Length: 244
Image (cartoon, rainbow, N blue to C red; front, side, top):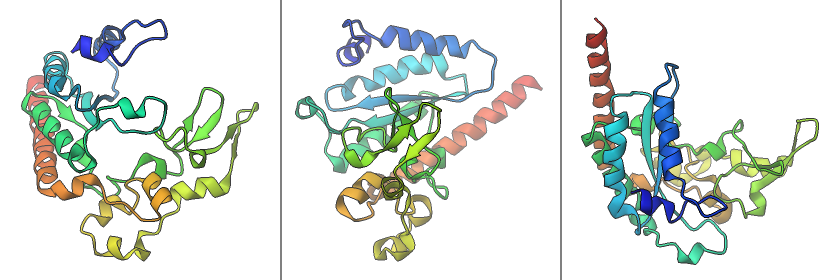
């Protein structure tokens, strides 16, 4: 998997990054502190066949450490000169692939990040959270981590005094959403979890509250979330027994 990773995630000088990232994670696991680590694995058609090999490697290293969780995220075309070169999955099946990878992770003894997505607000995007910001290297404030080329995503600046200078109108685009007025949201079984804010970017660009792509695979979602809950419960039992 290292060779596949290093083809796309390189340092400025062209050196690969897999080994350093993996070693940093292993060094974290040696610490005795209470923390949570989300290992985000980005996938597209070109690297998906190798993801399960990475999952196996992660399992061999972190399956006994409940602080580490994996998250599989589909690569998309978010802007930039190389967008058309990306071999991405169709929107309709990205969620299905991600769910399948999560099931594989659970089979290999790894915790995933899916445990809370069916809870109230579990599907709400971080960009819709009024207290969530992305700070660019030049001090630009964003709400979304992927639409960095979108002018509506540039909501302000960090001043020299460290205070935020926010364009309230742009900020409101991301956080103001009343799903109680949307006819589709009002009838949707996933409304408590999604709240019409699964992706503020799509809502801004289309004027419609988007449904989470996982909604069409809700039976598989419920199955994976159920397995994750059971996984955590059994792990707690094992930990309790090991220290009794």
